[in-house]
Image (cartoon, rainbow, N blue to C red; front, side, top):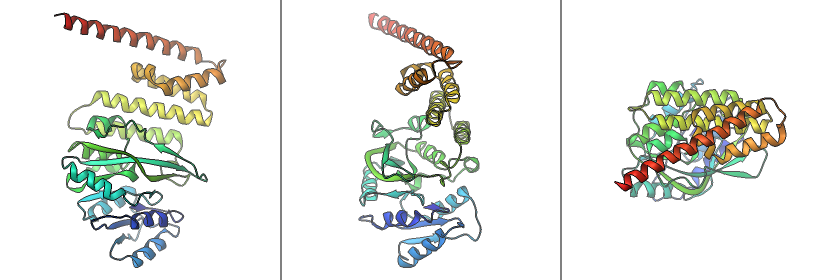
Amino acid sequence: MITYNHEKFIAQAIESVLIQETSFPVELVIGEDCSTDGTRQVVRAFAQLHPNIIRPLLPEGNVGMHRNLQSVLQACRGEYIAFLEGDDYWTSPQKLQKQANFMDSHPDFSICGHRMMHIFQDSAEGTPYPSPVQKEYGTLEDILRCNYLPTCSVVFRTSFLPEMPAWTRTLQHGDWPIWVLLAERGPVGFINEVWANYRVHSGGVWMGASTEARLAGLKTTIKTIHKHLTKPHPAARRAALFNMHLFGASQFCRQGDYSQVRTRLLLALVISPVAFVRSGEVRALIGKQARLYAIKKGLEPLKRRYYRARIWAGAERRKMWQSAKALVGR
């Protein structure tokens, strides 16, 4: 667990670890990065109450997310490591046991995750993530296309984690590069059950940033990861960038910035025309723009490109079908 300025949330996070029902011992290593609120006092109080379980790491000065995470990883002694940041919490007392059982029964797997709920600030309602259609057994290609493993859901095999390369410490995202490094060494498991809550609040590192900053950080992370892969995965890289632009379009749509919605949709179209015309989310976003801003300058070119892409995709499918028929007829 890494934590910084989570005074409002850290107790619930720690308690969700303490209630875990397991047949094996569990230790909780907490990296408290010199918070300016009362987080450190809460961590110390819990450590005094549970000295056999909680091991706090309390640097004298703020070291930043990456160094804090590295220190925590180096201090962990378990066969498996689970991630839980200080503003999230687990909701099932059997979470760790079930994931350990999965990993024990799949000794070649490097990592597994599960679904969780997005709990939004000042709201009791949540939204499940990711989609339940995720495959139970994934590959490096899958995790390169989309970071579908929520940080608070992950359990991974400690022996499969290499020493963290220096390039990972330059990125805004600390988790995705780790999942990629692990997926290079073994398959990815996914359990379609909700066992955690991810808290969305303005004080979070990710949610506290602007949409533009988040998209820029995502783009840098994707390009850096692919730069350091042992072999190229161009299709996965295109898919990741397509998903990034689609995410940006959705965020700008919520903000009512329809000019940026159009820009992000155009970028998604350029990167992957076939994925563009197959995407239900793209159709929904275009429909919303058409209903609300049909007279806005620039919408007609977007619609024309959309339909041209549909025609192009259909032509490509017909070529593939003709090739397949020719092969069958031989």
